[in-house]
Structures are given as structure tokens and as C-alpha cells.
Length: 476
Image 1: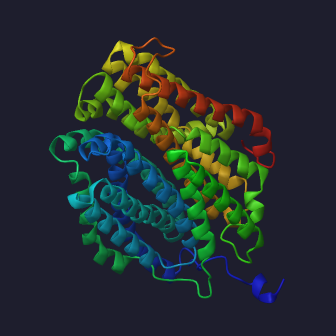
Image 2 (image 1 turned 90 degrees about the vertical axis):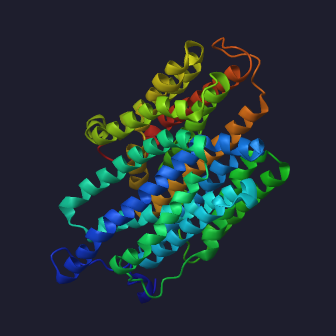
Image 3 (image 1 turned 135 degrees about the vertical axis):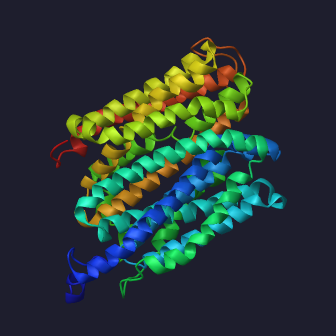
């Protein structure tokens, strides 16, 4: 090892709390953090709102078979940008990252609003919006961790989680009503973020680490791999299957031989890290399907519009938001491993409950049964992410969390693409285990049962792998 290698800095130096330099950065952060959080909130709102009504959008644009791409392709982008921003955040200018992200968000909002481009304009617009939105989440977490006082950080993290839940609830609630007017309003409102650029320029740090080499090849390869895998599960074609396999092999070869890859081979081959990410992947397969799935039941089975569905479903998401405030102490008391098992069990029961409740009316199927699934999600995210971070060295925790975030996003995208295809094909409309009527009711009941089976398999994987995952960790 050379002297240069031994002294290579791990990131942009952070001023110590109590110094004049820290106070200057802290004063800027007090303005920037609420602003960035508001921008993040708008992104969450739009993600959940469009995810709620993508079926409606596809029908109105005459492309129902492509509708799932409105959610699945932005999901791929979300996964890729999670790991890219996470890897870059310690080395590049937060100001440039956030401003470029905001510009992408605004351009995406404009693209999706132009009727001439049809459904592909919406898909590309949502992809750009997602790429820009994720920058705000990453920048928020970095600002809080580096430039706020230690005793304030926990409060900001709690606000971050609560904001995500409540803005998701608002997106689901308002999406149905906006479709009664014009669904393009959901995309248009994103253009308001252009007004925030002057404030971002004045209040965000502009430091970067000299000599840092961005692993462009690694980022491109992981993006191609993630995209090919997700698109394969969308279309199930031999060509895309071969492309997914090829890009995965090339990525593995590159990471194993590159001098300075953005993620180390040791991390990617660590059994605990691989296993917890496998649990994450399988556990989140239904995460993007639950909202449009319930919306589809309302539209196709009960004949109600999306506004009525929103009124029913929003209570489930509000429950998850409220539980987000109190789940932390409960998770600490139960331990990470028991919390993951409890969360997955609730998610399984919730999905079965939706399928079982369809014959009993819209209140049970659209409002009551989904509560159990969303209740479980309140106990899943925190222990999974915490466990993923603890399976690697502290110096790699940021990249580990970025990789786990990518897994979550890609998993949901694959799930909604695969399950959306099943719904559109009506292949399971001839009957269900719960004896619902043939047709759409049977299709949706069977899809939710498949979802329950997938999440249950995540529970089994975790049970079998738990000792390996936590073999070097304490306070499980």
C-alpha cells in the first residue's frame, strides 16, 4: 500500500461542532434543511399519487398494457439514483447535486404535461422527476448528519420518516379527486420547485473532494443491470433475459477487477449483507402493487371511482404514518430480528385479508384489510436498513444503505411490472381460493394471494438465515 493510498481521505472534511466553521455551516443548514425537506415531500406526494392512478392514466391514453411502466421505470431510476447519490454524497458538492436534481424534477414535470408525447411522455417525465426527487432525500440526510448539532439529529430523522408517510397519505387521498378533474395536474405541480433554486444556491455547501474519481463505469453498469433485470420481469422476453444475465456478469467482473470501484467486492460477497438484501428484495416485491391493486379492486370489482378508493385507503397509510412515530421504541424493545419477523407476518396477513375481504364489500376490502399490511410496513423499514448497515464496515455504511435502497426500489418495480401484467392478462379470472366471483374479483384476489406467498417466502428466508445475518452483531 502506498502512502497516497494510506492517507486518502474518506470524504469531504466535516467541521467539528462548536467551531466557527461549523456554526457557519449550521446557520446555512437551518435554512436549507426545511427547504429540502419540503421539496422531498412534494416528490413523495407525486410518487404515491401517480402510483395510485397509473391504471387510470394508461386507460385514458389508450395504452393500458404499458401503464405499469409509469411506476416500474421510475422505480428503476429511484433504485439507481439511491446508490449513485449515496456514493457521491461524501465527495461532491451538495449544492450542485441538489440544483441539478431540481432542474431534472422540473423538466420531468414539463415533459409529462405535454399531451403530444402520450404515455411515453408520462413515463419519461416520471423518470426525470424521480431522478431529481431522490437528490433531495440524499441531501437532506447528509445535511442532518454533518451540519446539525448532535442532539437535534434524532428529531430530524423522525420528522423525515413521518413526512414520508403523511405525504404518501396525501398523495393517495388527493390522487383520486384530481383524476376527476385532470390527472396531468399531478405532474404540473412539480414545476413549482424552480422557485427554490435561488435559496438552494445561497444555503447549501459547495465543497467537493479534490482528486476524487467518480466510478462512472461502475454506475453505468449497475444502472444497465438494474434496468435489464426489471425490464425482463416486465416482458419476459428471451432477449431481455439474456441482457439481464450479461450485464450482471459484466458488473461482477468489473467490480472484482476495478482499482477503485464504488462498492467493494468484499461487501457484495459478504453472506450477511447478501442475505439481508435478499430478504429486503423479496419482502418489498408487493410494495408498489398494494396501492394500485386496491385501486383496481375499487374500479373493476366495486365500480367506484378512484376518489372513493382514496377515501377508503388513506386511513391505512395514515395508520402507518402514526405508527412511524412510535415504532422506534417498540423496535428497540423487540430487537431487530423479532421486529422483521413481526413486520413480515403482518404484511402476509394483510394481503390475505384483502383477498378474503373482497366478497364482504368495499369497506372491508379497501379500508380495513389494507390496514394490517401497512401496519406491518411500519416495523419493516427501520430494522432492515439498520441490519444492512451493520453487516459491513462503518466506512462502507453509506454505500450499503444506498445499495439497500436500490434493492427496495427495484424490488417494488419488478413486483408491480410482473403482477400488473398478471392483472392485465386476466389469466387468473376463473376462480379463487376464497370463492370470490369469476372475473376481476377473482383476478385481484389471486394476485393478492400471490403477494402474500412472496412476502411469506421472505419470512422463511429470514428465519433460515437469521443466525448468519446476525453472527457478528450484538443487540439483535
